[in-house]
Image (cartoon, rainbow, N blue to C red; front, side, top):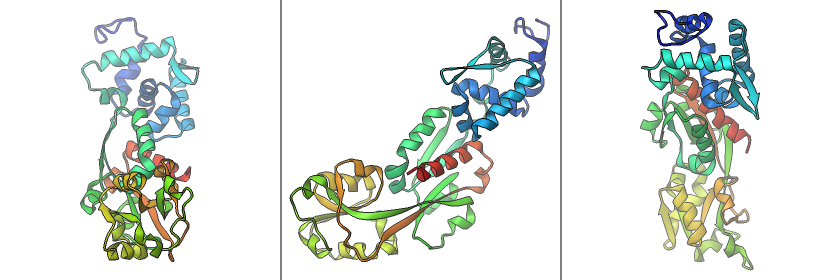
Length: 312
């Protein structure tokens, strides 16, 4: 069907034309969800990008299909493939929105700022964030450190604090929750533990090189280790990056603290027997800036980070 008002749209069902004319440019969730499934190629990835569960998204699409009295998708090898009627709906969408940006077609993509401590990002979250960005290629994300001025302006904030310690962030952010408790131990290059006696006390480390990530110095629960490093008169290297610390342990034969279960531990380092009097632990927390709590992408990232820690 082609009319004066729908010129150039081809033989389009009046039902589809009416749907788009009245709903696509408004706030019709089902229509936007349809376009998200098309863009992501399937329901699972579309649900993650929208911050929905799979079943919620599937129910929304089913409702749209019932409203139109037509089937829009069929599954092929785990992917959602458009039916001929679904193709017609997509083509009409693209023609009506030909001069609009991709955000108008596929739903708004957010420009998000994530404040993540380097220790958490490098040791635990790189792979998860890569997966999020691969599944949501329209996202624009800025990663910043955990300096207080960065935390105040970030949309999603992840921070470290000592167990049982209060933190003002948990009172100023929306949906604060503890993600995990990280334990830390001294580590050395694995090759240095073969056929050798490993240090069993801080005194045994006098003849070993040590490396200190400066981020540890802000935490009082690391006092025993920090004091030992500060009192050394030789063979102490200070670095401002967890990655640099790992490199010094791995390749320069230094002893240093690493978080247990982190990604670094798959790369030729070995934990030394426990010889510190106090346990070294830090809690990982996350929260959303109040102005960002309504943004689906911000909520989706916070939930993915939560699940990443819960699966470790």
